[in-house]
Image (cartoon, one colour):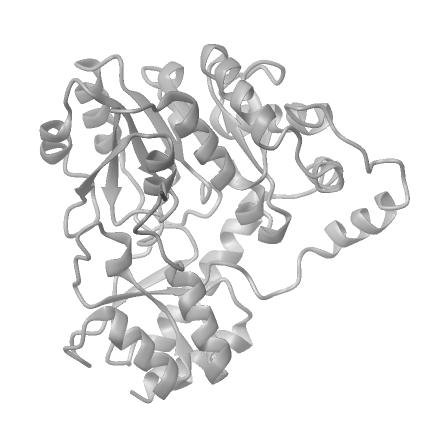
Length: 375
């Protein structure tokens, strides 16, 4: 028996393996290829020689929790209790898995908005729940008529991802107001908000569930230092939720992970004293603008990118092949790896879209663009 009989190797592994085989430029997986902040390395080197290598408290290093609480206040003006409303996790993915498996049981339904990050559905399935996949609009805005029609007496949770991976879409104020109006009718539904790209938004400010008083008590928010600080391999994220939710989440977390990498927590805790998250957003905006300018005369059609470090393109002017086959051909013939958007849909919706990651050095983006412009 398999709890995940239909799960195979992820598209990220497939595309990266193919990119390695053909020596292609890898713009598929969502990780930076540039060095981390030198200040982070300096702190790491110094702290490695200190006595920081044993378990931290199960919920997280107290100094790090305190600084996240301050960060949450400074950014969102939400006052959270580090002792009872916060949890350090082994990356946001583990936090999301833990939150789902805490509250979702056999027969429960979880609404997931497609295209969606690939960890949501397996987490629901392992918990014994039923994923209910609802497509976003063509412009990747939420369709509340579809969402409302999908709600049943079995609906336990809705998963929101904002800023959105894979499309870079950001919810606006009217989206939140519409969701609040809808959920007022269903007070039993829990919201799980994946906000790992919260510090990477461009023209419009990121609206967090932290700022929505009507929903904060029923929302679990997942964040990621891996994404915000370009240290994806450190796998340090965190959850913030009301005390009644967090007490239950911690029960599951302690038997899944117990405590997270101590060295990374100590280093990040000290680094937060000097990092400026506004500068991180500016840096990624420059990279987005560079990548868009490099491709503006290509045969690819650039989709709007409001946040994250992903650029979606339409290749309908280039090929009629399905997006998976075209993405593979792009690697084998053009030497650039991307992710096909259809894999993020339950029904494999194919609109001839690819996702490129621009969290790369300028040199990498220039080389990739040269190959893409030659098509």
